[in-house]
Image (cartoon, rainbow, N blue to C red; front, side, top):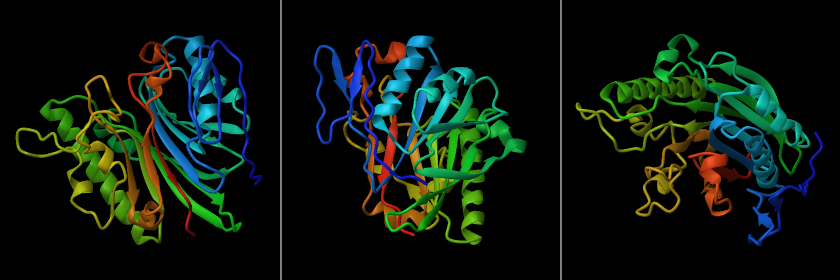
Length: 300
C-alpha cells in the first residue's frame, strides 16, 4: 500500500482548502482542516440526511467536504440514492465505497481511502434480526492498515443506523439491538484481541428510559470491561455546543470501541465537526446531523 498525505484543491462556488493548522473563512474560500495526520487513523460517522437531499448541489458539496476532511474511513447513513454516492466517490482520488445491499429505503455505506486502508471482508450483521435495527442491518467491514513501522494492523468497523424516536417500542428495539451488538462483541473478543469500532446514528442519548426504566444502550453501558463509548464525554457535556444533532439539541451519533482499543484511546481524539459554522445553508444542502470522528494511532 502506498502511504502519502495528499492536499487536494477543488474549485467551486465555495472553494475548500485544507491548511496545516488553521481554519478561516473569507468571502469565496471556506477552509476545513484535515481530521488527522499521516501517522493516525481517522474514522468518521455522518448521517447525511436523505442523501442527496438537494440533488447535484448536495453531491458536489459532500464530495468537497469529504475530500477536505480527508479521513481514512467514513461511515455514512441515510443514503437514499447509492448511484449518487458513487458520483461523490468518483470525485475523491483514491477513495472507494462499500454499500450495504439489504437495507430498506435508506442505506448504509462505508467510504475508505484505498491508499491507507484495505478491506479484507464485508458482512451484514443480524440480517435475521433486522427488525431491531429498523430493517437496516449493520454493515461490518474488516480492514488492514500499515503502521509507521510497516506492521499490519487489523481492525473492524461496524456502521449502523438505529431505530428512531422515543416511543416505548422504539426504545425496546434499540435495547434489543444493543444486546445483540454486545453479545457479538463478546464473542469476537473470545476469538482473539479484536479491534472493533461501532459507529453511526444511534438515535438516542445515554439517559432516556422507557416506562419500565430501561434505556436503549443498557447492555453496552453496563459492561465496561468489554468496551465503552469513546463519545461519552462529548455526549455528557454540560454544553450543547458540540451536539451531533443540533436541531433537538442532543448527541445521538456515537462511537463505541472494544476493549482492545483502550490503549489507542489514551492518545486519541474524538471530535464533533461543526460544519454548519462553515455553511449557512448546511441543513438545506447537507444534513441535520453533524459528523463525529475519532483519531488515533494504531498500536499493533
